[in-house]
Amino acid sequence: ERKVSAGTAAAAALEAADPKEAVDELADSLVGTPVEEMKPKRQSKPEPKPKSVLELSGEEQLRESIGLFLDPLDHDLARVVPEREAFSAVLECSIRDHERFLRADKQMEEDARAILRRQQEAEAAAEDDGVAGEITLGAEIVQEQEQEQEAQKEKDVQKRR
Picture 1 (cartoon, rainbow, N blue to C red):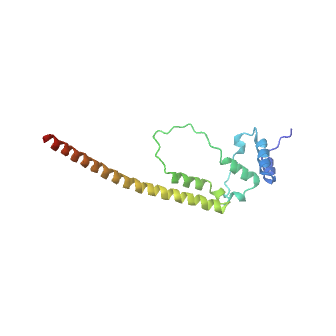
Picture 2 (cartoon, helix red, strand yellow):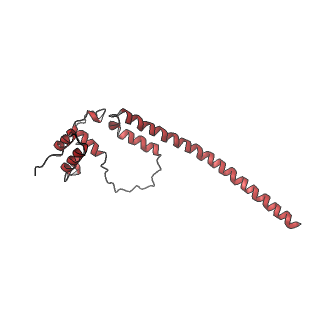
């Protein structure tokens, strides 16, 4: 069996007509390949980042794409309880991190930004509802207490009769 490098297989996979065949071929070529070899290679002096992933070569596109799914394992524990982060902030960070891929498809970029805007609007509305809800809840509690006091007074009046 001939050993094919991941880069050569990636280039062949990108040129294949059938996407399923391309994925299968690529997966076969990556079996046994250490994760470190699949990560984008660091160079001694940084090159300017392309505006879009489409400006990369086939092998670089593949490395970038696979890199999206590689999560480093971190076993460090924080000394404090982490602050809750708004989901819109998480989305915004994700959009920023994957900007190169989003720029490859203008519609995808617009969709991602629209989702972010909707989430931000929903969070703002939820904050407004939360304040209004607290006011309403407070008013309901006061009203309930008044009703209980009136009912108690009526019971006292009936006992005296």
